[in-house]
Length: 208
Image 1 (cartoon, rainbow, N blue to C red):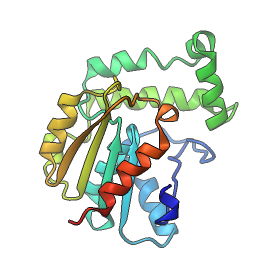
Image 2 (image 1 turned 30 degrees about the vertical axis):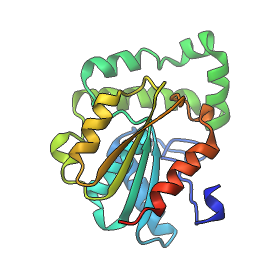
Image 3 (image 1 turned 180 degrees about the vertical axis):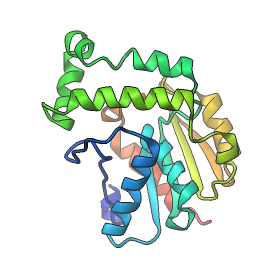
Image 4 (image 1 turned 180 degrees about the horizontal axis):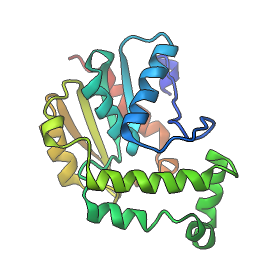
């Protein structure tokens, strides 16, 4: 795995996992979490892998802190946000319905975020999606300013995003590429970690 060939750090965004928070979720809040993490670890310039919303935050971070980023890999990231898509996703983020209709997912969220915290994470994520739908912080004019070498990956079976918007975003970036990954679906726990690690390692080892 990657930790055998390089230093690997994992980051929980504020309000996720063991990182407790009373703040509302926002891309700027999560961007601040990244810069604080990098400073606390005494890192200077880093490669970033971001899954789903983490990929969006990675690009936003690269826009605001270009000197801190070498390469970015995203997986399953939604780039084109609008009110209709946000509304559709928010309907899936009702804690009570999740617990009643998809108890296995509720248990997974509880294991990740804690028994008392997971419902708040879901509700705050729904509010964040509404904000993204109404006023996405990254649009084409922002993507064109991002210089970091970026590989945008999307599983062929992932329905969170589309190949069309992923390719368009990769073309808007100054140094972007797109990779469609066979048989990958959206949930990260269902992704073959060995194959994902190989994709990341290959991209990071490429010469600029």
